[in-house]
Image 1 (tube, rainbow, N blue to C red):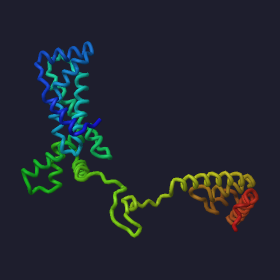
Image 2: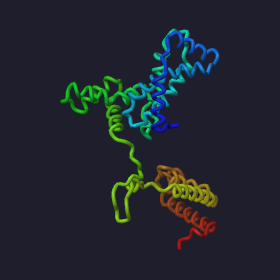
Image 3: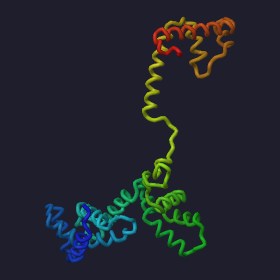
Image 4: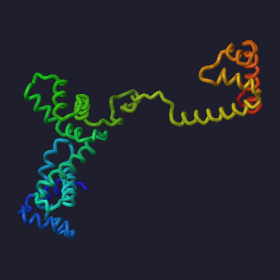
Length: 287
């Protein structure tokens, strides 16, 4: 839950007043939490390291998200670190917790900075969080570099392609824009961005209707074709239904008849189909 500004300031002041832990006391608290699930030990351990959470959260305040929310996510990372910490390794808890706090805050920023999810690989994350700093550093070293050259150097430093750098730079350069955002005035009132997104594809109900009608007509045709003889069926199939329709000459050679005779049989078969369809479905007759 997001805290009010007053509550957030009080929380920060309380965190900054929390006493530091000596190494031995820190190890004892961590061991008590791990071995016995001592909630009081967990509270003292995490409370003493909230100033670390606040300091790390402050590094990400330029990403346009609420600082209290960043601190809250950092606290989630701190609790995750406490759950995974192994006191017997003789490592300071702050050293171990720093990675979890930073990772939790970074994941939160990536989830909420834009409605469009970006890359989640380690290289993409490094690019997202270091792009501004690297670009400023490179530009300060040589202000004559072109944008493409700057992108190339950033790509080499992070280990991604120049295309990835250009794409990420474009994403960071501007915020998300709602399709319902107004773009101007028209005679009928204000226009939204959505009004200018033209799609020529049929509407979903039209697509479904066409599919149902097509399946119904195929069923009618199959039923009507039962009135045809085997030879008529073969000629229509090879002439009209195959992807590469056979010529009259080719079918005539197969059946041992002239191409004119094939044409006559085909014409008669089509007329029989038409009559069968109209008898079964008179509503198909032209007006």
